Length: 239
Image 1: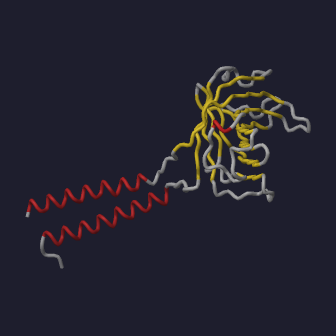
Image 2: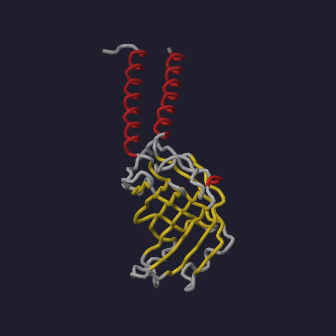
């Protein structure tokens, strides 16, 4: 039995700590944590060509506009190409592997169907990131539009940008002579018909930090610790 105030205070503090630890554990379980091998890049590009004969984009993208986006992929994805000079990586799940784009008025592309990366380390080095999804607002289902795709292509004609066909941990724009973004909508015909085409020149690409939601759980524990110290001080003063 606990017959003194200090004993009861110790018991209550122990129970509070156990409860808060359980809460923090539940937050860790409920919030998906991005694994360490995943990398994310911020991309900025300037539109230099548009072919939209049916005005499917409604003039939302114009030559000279700035496009921004995120590229994210998991470095642990397996190479599905057995050759030593070409790596092919199927980006699953899409929650970790995707391209997302925005124009000057807001979001305009999201990955919905698939995302893959082809890395070629040969006489010419290439990093080809390809996503299939839809625009915002949607253009799928418009005339001659069965697919909406976004491609980010980096080409080094000297063949010195890459050391292997592995997914690159860092991308340095200065290493590539060609750096472009292609947005296209096309039909599923044997000879595809294009609904629209947009080309943009990449101005910058830089690796960025991925937000870590589990920091919320650590914050809860930190606040709990402050609260318990305050209660302890109050108990000591009242003794």
